[in-house]
Image (cartoon, rainbow, N blue to C red; front, side):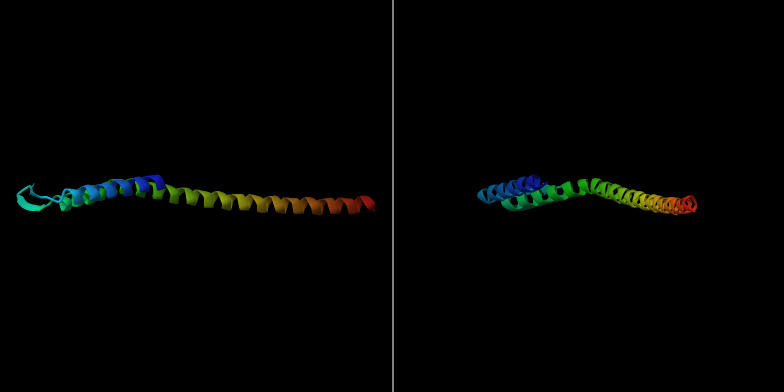
Length: 110
């Protein structure tokens, strides 16, 4: 995961360096709007929009993964509770066995 962050930072830095080296004014047309802006600003805004689109695209997967994790945490808690119940039953049965052994040992000795 950290390597992707490092790569993303490197790409962003390269984009910024490229943008500042190409700071000429350009004409931009977007649907019905026409405006002039620095190439650097246009490139940085384009990069920012790409990052936002990437984040928006990844949100459903993140939500799905978090829901799965929550579901598995509930399953783990249920299994742990069931395991604890079984351990309690085992301990109760051991206690009964010990009591029976003591009872029969007392009878055999008399």
